Length: 537
Image (tube, rainbow, N blue to C red; front, side):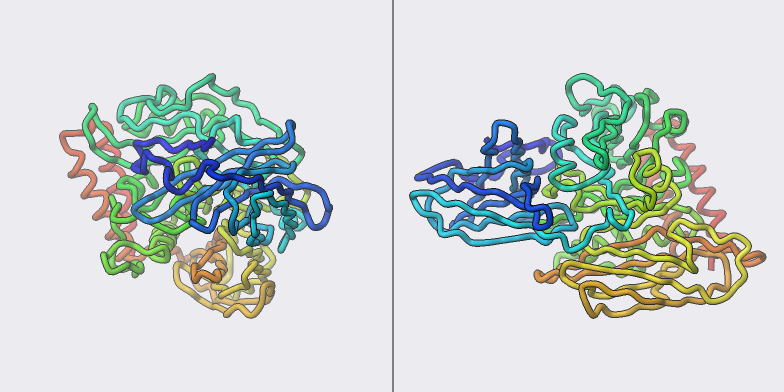
């Protein structure tokens, strides 16, 4: 049976791949197992099965103790289909008509995918797939997390192991109606509210079960979009209605929660920054997919010309353009003094993407614990990735470090980068521009880049991978910050002017719709950006 967690109201087809996902016709049994190359033992993984007509098939576990979780989500307008089965570390089988079968196995980001074609006879077939790591970040003291999931809590232990993601944050509370407290959300996951306690899968895989999405599309039952933000890691329900944002912001802080911005093109993303004062910015978000990219013409807020985002002939953002939109907005906020840490989350469950396809890596050289992982994440001792890996030290300091009383001079950045298809290029970003770069020459490389610091600002490193299909994948460190006495950071005028334009437009659009307390927050955000703009150049 096909299992889907895709709500029809999210704009996807309500018919889930009915023509692409096949049931048994003249079926014969395909039997298989997935083995770890190092241990020689069965390993949990993600399995794709398709026949020569292009139809997808799902597998089942062959062991009563095993688990097989079918996933099928489609975006018809963009020809984006994510159809797979995540399997526990047990043999599997599937009923598939005879013919040529493509079998593909993946496990997170750190294993080399394996694909083979099987001449599947009417007597059945047997396959054995061996997975090999191309890197092992845990051995280097880095542990990964997917900070944004729409998957049922009951499935998350299985998914954490199959994708080798150390920390998962699945949604529980979810509201899409203005004025409705998140704890009473109209889209909240059915069933009992989970206890605000860490769920331990094993010594290096855990789940925090109490997380909330505020995603407002209506006011008084009428369509009126505001946007979305994500709260993760909180210890109690959020009972303050939204908007305004002030009361819920106080509750988030009191309950130990953390705010993430979610996507760059939500109408209120820019207003949220000075209002909610989040620590995190979703740099790799739920429109970074393994399958074909697509946002189509959906652009509540479009990228401005100064961002120079690539577009298709219909003027919609391409995949590279979408990534650039997020990067340039992030850099503009950093340039304006907002010390935001990048995160990565998939939204798997409502999007055609596997769990952990985009993930946040946090450095823990002394070993894994959830509490320490969260502390280090807040410090910015992290990088995000949907493919390559990048480790960096800035004058010997990790990402997230603040250089106080820094004397102007040269900063040396030592790096290690790796990618399963080879590094395409490595770039040092200084105050939003590429200060130094090196083209990739191998699957793994290390070296040093330099930049001169003359005033307060920030610096980060990013690495790109070019896949065989011609798609760019990204790894990006959190910034380090430089505080140079008597030389403060200077915002960029085109960036702060755009912030003002966005907030003014939203304030006007909300007049007569939102309550006065909410409109006052737009006025306060405008004042903050106008103050920044007065210092800009």
